[in-house]
Image 1 (cartoon, each protein chain N blue to C red):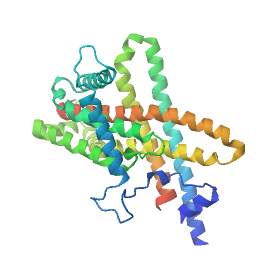
Image 2 (image 1 turned 180 degrees about the vertical axis):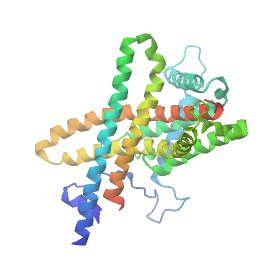
Image 3 (image 1 turned 45 degrees about the vertical axis):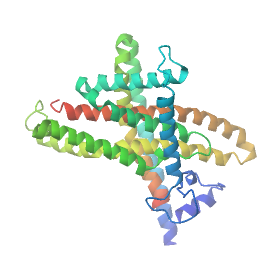
Image 4 (image 1 turned 180 degrees about the horizontal axis):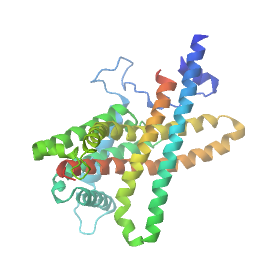
Length: 251
Length: 78
């Protein structure tokens, strides 16, 4: 009801959220978990792109790297340094997982910026799997490494004794909200940016303001390129922070 | 008539939720501004604190995204 009214009252020729519709690639049947949809296609393109960059780009193993090899080396060095800085030496063991997360999100975000493409990370279903995956991994690592000492994460031993139970309740709540905010941050940022571009694209149909609208689309597109990189970075660095909490729960 | 009032409530609620986005913008600006002020006072310490800056930005921004999500739910999902 609200949807119809929204589309007609603002005079948009298309709905700004139409771009996030999932449809099967072959035929028009109902979508099951095994149906190949446009989400599957663009996730596969992201994976193929990552493999192409890292397997074929660095196959030469040149001492003076080629352009693709140096892109791969830069990304590798950047993430490695981040993991080492944030989690410490013993967190480096989990570097492959964090690198995988970063590359998948980065490629999905940037592939979504190609016109007419589909942004897989704009769906909460996709980012929730990543976010809850990080949450489960980190919690299990913490419980495995420290046992019940892991619960010291919620018990601030340097706080005044009267405040400790209250702080513990707040800490527990904030701990369990982590996966929700972790996944919604990524999906919300990407979806909001793409929806704003579509809203301005709707204004471009009106001849009087179309130059302004096209300029605005260009500007917002530039912002979105920035956001795509920053959100991948933020997701990864928060994963590192959560991992650090699990590895060193004492403080 | 009742449907109209419900729709009115949806739109007003979505507009009110947009206030949260503005508040998050204040928060993000505060983080970035204070980082810049600190970085200009002590430029040698600035590079080591960029990670903290982004974590702070992300936490401040997340709550704005939540209010945006509430607005979207009111507009399209209710």
